[in-house]
Length: 87
Image 1 (cartoon, helix red, strand yellow):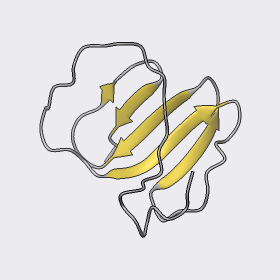
Image 2 (spheres, rainbow, N blue to C red):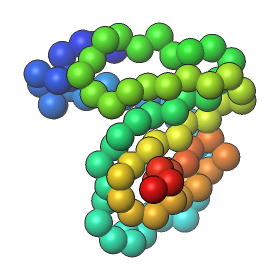
Image 3 (cartoon, helix red, strand yellow):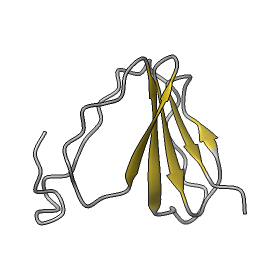
């Protein structure tokens, strides 16, 4: 990991998940902006300081939940989901 993502957008902070194959993605409307990353796992990710969205840890089985401000919720797999906060 590196700490210059806020100054060099070509070097973003990246989480890597090993997901099983699935059907291709289908665009369903405008994409929302990332507001927060919920990392669920036995221990918090060791994330360096950066100027991006908050990374919040909750204990549990490994899972990554991306919180966006628009679009629709998507359960990509049991390890990855996209959520829209309740308004």
